[in-house]
Length: 361
Ligand code: SAM
Ligand code: SF4
Image (cartoon, rainbow, N blue to C red; front, side):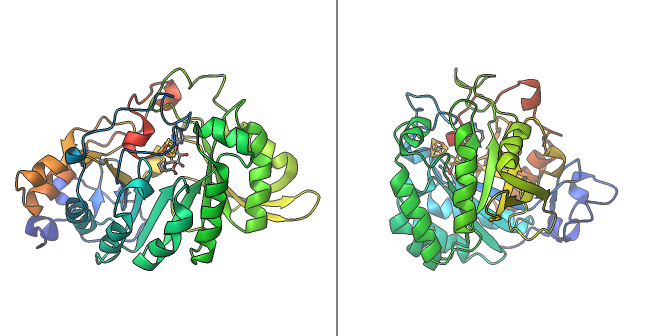
C-alpha cells in the first residue's frame, strides 16, 4: 500500500488544528490527532464478539446475539486496516473481544499482525481459559504482552462472577504464559461490590507471589442490564482502601510498567510479610481519564469507535468491501477521529447500551 500523499505532506493540517500537540508523546509524521490534541497511537482490535464466558459485568445472563460470521472482519481485512492505522501513527495494537482465543486461527492472525512494520507493541487481553495450550504458540508467533482477566481465586466465586467459567484453566493459562516467556504479564480484575470485593487482597497476594502486575478495574456501565447499580458498583477509592488495609501503598510514577494505558500504579508492601506488590487502579467512572485517552477501537465487524461510549458510525469494513483506497480510508478515519468526544458521560450515569463483549473493552 502506498502512503497517502496528502497526509504525508500535511500531517495535521487536514484536521485544521493549530497549536501544539501534547509534548509528552513522540512526534510521528502521520499522527492521528483529535480536536482535543490527544495523539492516538493505540488500536484496540476486537477480533470476535463470541465468548466462552458470560461475565456478569460484561453481558446479560442469557448471553448476547452474535453477528453472522460473514459480517466479521476476516484476517486479511484486519491486517489491511491495521496497516492503515499504523500509517496514521498507531504503534501499539491490542487484540481483544469477546474472547480473542475463541477466534479460529488466532495464532496465524497474531503472526500476520506482528509482521507489520511499525507495530512496536502487540498485546492481547484474554480470559485465559484456552491459554494453557495457546500461550507458547502465541509467543512464538510474535505476541509480546498478555493481560489475563481473573476476578477471584475462589473457584465457586469465579464460576458465579463469570457465569460458568472455571478457575483452574485460567490458573493453568497464567502458568503457561509465564513459562512461554511473556514479560510483564498483567492480571485484570473488575471490582464488584458484594461479588468479589472480598477477593481483592487474595488477588494482590497472588500477584505479589507470582511477581505479576495486578490491575483492579472499576465497573463501567456498559451493556447495562439489571446488574449495574449502586449494589454492585464499587468506587475505586474503596478498592484502594481495601488493598491498603493489607499493603502499604505508595504511588508508582516510575513509568516502568509497559502499556501506557489508563491505570494509575502503586507500589505496595505487605504490612506483615513485607512482600512487594505492583498494583494499578483503572477508574473510568469516579476518576475518569478521558483527557489522556490515546486509543481508538475497531469492532469485530470493522466499525470504528473513537470512544468507548461512541455508537460507532463508520464502517471501515463496508468501505474496504466497496473497494475504498488507502487514501479514502485514511481520510474517513481522520474525519471520524475529529469527532472524538471530550469524554464519556458514565460519571453522569449515561451508559453504553451495547455489551462490552461486542465492543472489546
Ligand atoms: N474476553 C477477554 C477478557 O475478558 O479478558 C477480553 C475482552 S473483555 C471485554 C476486556 C476487559 O474488559 C476485561 O479485562 C474485562 O474484565 C473488562 N470488562 C468487561 N466488562 C467490563 C465492565 N462493564 N466494566 C469494566 N471492565 C469490564
Ligand atoms: Fe467474555 Fe471477557 Fe466479557 Fe467475560 S469479560 S464475558 S470473558 S468478553
